[in-house]
Image (cartoon, rainbow, N blue to C red; front, side, top):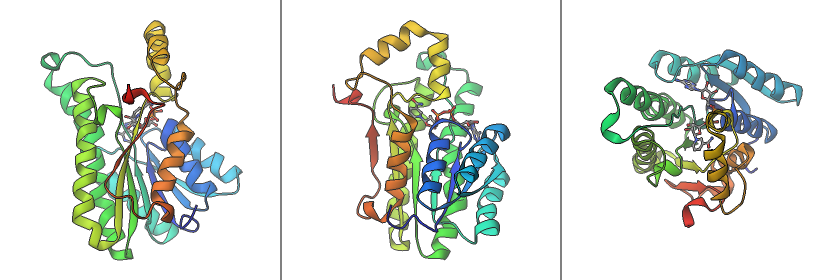
Amino acid sequence: MNGIEDGVAVVTGGGSGIGRQSSLRFAEAGAKVVVADVDEDGGNETVERIVRDGGEATFVTTDVTDSDDVAAMVQTALDEYGGLDFAHNNAGIADEGVRLAEYDEAEWDRMIDINLKGVWRCLKAEIPEMVERGGGAIVNTSSIAGVSANGGAHYAASKHGVIGLTRRATVDYADDGIRFNAVCPGVIDTPMVQQAGEDNAEEMDRITAGIPAGRLGDPAEIADAVVWLCSEDSSYVMGQPIVIDGGLLVQ
Ligand SMILES: NC(=O)c1ccc[n+]([C@@H]2O[C@H](COP(=O)([O-])OP(=O)(O)OC[C@H]3O[C@@H](n4cnc5c(N)ncnc54)[C@H](O)[C@@H]3O)[C@@H](O)[C@H]2O)c1
């Protein structure tokens, strides 16, 4: 894709699911990739797959709730590959959720700390390097729960917040040549959803039957959008939440 080749990308949550696929897609398109995750085994496996296919990638253990880790992640891109052009801020967690008034504060804080503040920590570390370099493109992973009342209240609040960050960053840094967009996946066949399916197979069948596409999404279908949103082919797309959900929300 235009402008991806020879660039440098960081991907959080790159050790599994959607982040693994976007890491692979960035590498296939010719970018060098910093794969960041708390899960060392998963992150290293993503790097091994990229290298086996002839690409370049490095793993860095990163917890997005830790500002020092996030700073080290960006520093790895600078040290290993000389700069930072693209970021996919994607690390996140989900759980079943309860009704709004039933959350305890620790559960609420943990969800917001990883899914929302984690994205902010990444933006805070990535943006100055892109300003310095003269531009870049960033995609944050939100969810259909970022534009509708899907998911638990804490998850929905975190994913709505990711869209707010994406919009505000667009306005703040357009003059610096940095574009920001968000992807809003529907129900995607990743370990996150497979776990939910194992926990409640009947509910998963019901959800799948309600998707107009008639199936779950493939993480590669999200990854393709992420790489396109970082490429010059999407140069006029700015600040958008892009819903990729097999038609689930249009009903
Ligand atoms: N799968 C879906 O249906 C779906 C739908 C909408 C949005 N999403 C979002 O997509 C993103 C990726 O989800 P996925 O389905 O690929 O899940 P996944 O569980 O397969 O992958 C998530 C990755 O994030 C990592 N991670 C979790 N907490 C972290 C932290 N504190 N620091 C760094 N890494 C951390 C995990 O180790 C894991 O490798 C998440 O933000 C999720 O909310 C997923």
